[in-house]
Image 1 (spheres, rainbow, N blue to C red):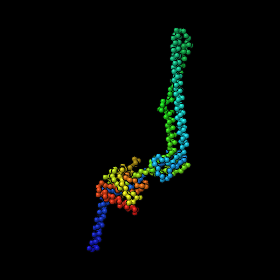
Image 2 (spheres, rainbow, N blue to C red):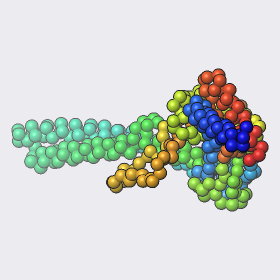
Image 3 (cartoon, helix red, strand yellow):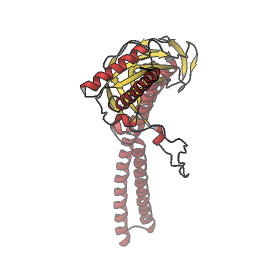
Length: 351
């Protein structure tokens, strides 16, 4: 075989090999999608006090693991305790004021009854003298005095009714629906809530990090003092949208983390995001801005998957990079998919 023939043979082998590799990657992209654009994320909660005060106790240290409800730090509770006591005194005063109004209400009712009795008496006297005056048995002055006393008694009755109505308005409703008592109880509840806020506890299990507090310093309400990294991991992976045609919640996947070379972890797809930021537009009143590109083949759109690990690796930090291999239902292609991710996990020893 001449050198030219050998060269031609190698060219044929190379072309066949290239065609085979191209066909494999084309099939793999459709039947067994894989992406290196994956990351382990954790919910990070910024811990901020809901009330202001001086820090008197720091119960945790940086990078310490805590459970939900564990004390993180405490503020000086004395001002809040005094506020609770003041609110309790205000509630007691409201109860006492209502009792005084109840007594005034009883007195006003008695005064109204007396005024009504006096009016009835003065009315009978006026009618009696009017009859006697018609018979010329009493003087005009006596009749006028009786009528004047009747009108005065009527005015006194109206004043008694007005005082009774005013006291009833001031007293308000009976029982727990009374406005004065509701306001006092509301202030007491707010004071007790502020007292509880002086003890800042962990809202969830996690790890304390980026702690910016020291005993004796002043903590302002709403100012973040530390971050709490959740112990629940959400694995996100970005795939080209054509690769997700047959992917649903529950689809099996294999994960290889950069920080754990040679290890493969089982996972399942938990959800697929409804969209990406490129598909979100603001109604700002401006005309549309079409995307301009001089490329013949545009970049493929990527969509985000969320996956749940069957077994959580130890010491997995938030932001850890990973490679995700989706497993097809076909046994043969699933075998090739396992080989792909196994090879990549071994390559993590190198890069």
